[in-house]
Amino acid sequence: MAAVSGVRTRLSRAFMLQAAFIGIAAIVSVFLANVMLEGVLIRQALRDEADFYWARRDADPAHPLPATLNLTGYIDGGPREVVALPRGFHDWNDGARRNVVYVSEHAGKRLVLVFDRGGVARLATLFGLLPLALVLLVLYLSTWLAFRASRRAFSPVIALARQVRELDPSAAEPGRFDRTRLPSTDDEVQELADALARYSERLGEFIAREREFTRDASHELRSPLTVIHISAELLLADERLSDTSRRAAERIRRAAKDMDELTSAFLLLARESVAGLPTSVLCVNDVVAEELARARLLAEGRSIESRLIATHRLHLEAPERVLAVLVGNLLRNAFSYTDRGEVEVTIDAQGVVIRDTGVGIAAERLAEIYQPFARGESARRGGFGVGLSIVRRLSDRFGWPVHIESQAGVGTRIEVRFPAARVEPIGATGS
Image (cartoon, rainbow, N blue to C red; front, top):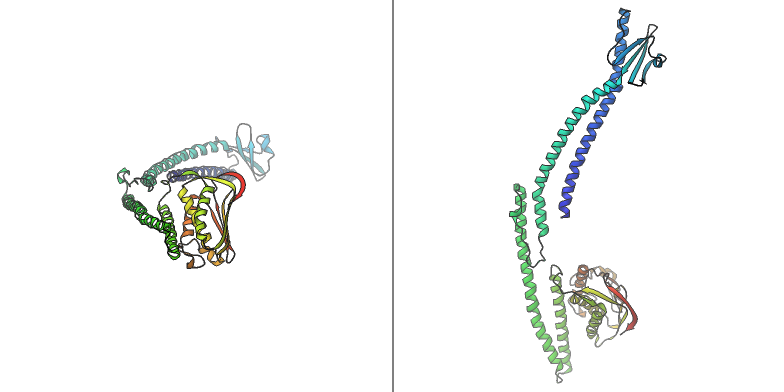
């Protein structure tokens, strides 16, 4: 709706500025015309009047002085305020009128012409402002009519934008574009509306297929994984199983668990939004402790020490499965790429820090680790190469920044921050 209001506002502002500029230009033009009339035409008229009088006086010394409604002439005299004025033009206010005084001399005589400029100003106002008002009225009326016509021309586009804004692909029943709700439109707008309607229909079909796929995948993939996991547990419970077979069964169980986690992560990321995920206020410490216990199984047979240090307790409103997938992927990476040494997990006031003494990541490969199927030191570590890609996508979607520092042969430090978490300080504990 903000974009629609923005179009209307810009359109209104454009026409208002146009009308203002037209008015200012017209007023300035009349003002300049008045200045030209008083400053140039009046003075030129007085010069011509004086030249005409001197020419007629040379022919007839008894020729009368100029005397009209606005012009008065004096020979060797006049009001005392103008008698001593030098030759040329002067402004004189006699208290009742604003006058222009022109003094000229010829054959030893002095001619003083006094012109009432107020009359000219009144005429300029009468014959300048009235036509100006009429012109402005016509211009403003035409501008207003053009504005109304432009708004009618934009109304179908605004209606299109409103309908597109109301479409919600994440809704249980996504809306469809309804062309019948549009006002009468031109052919171009109707063609755009038809294209949007077709796009809306295709979008609805894609969303329906995506939801069917995620629903079917959730059932069809997890069912065999559950069977594999249960079968592996039963095999491991058989005391007659040889060591070689037990190790194979353990690998099967771990692979089934990894596939189950990977399926959960993919189904989470396949959602267009997270609105349908159940959320609750959970304790980050408890989720991290549970995932750490599960990840420790990867360290069997290797000299790896692991510990959890908590200086604060973090409470977060989020889907628990999402947080478990994110933290679990990071912890499994830490244990998978550490042959000996330690994996340390710290929970502080800002979030979770996972540090390991594993193989690390070379600087030139650090920028590639978030790419799908990018893997660490070598393929022998196992996994599918999508763990950090999943982490980055979950991080971006839920606003949990992840920062990774690593050095080949030294280890890796991963920091996950939870800006919206509620923090409770506790005494430092380790496990």
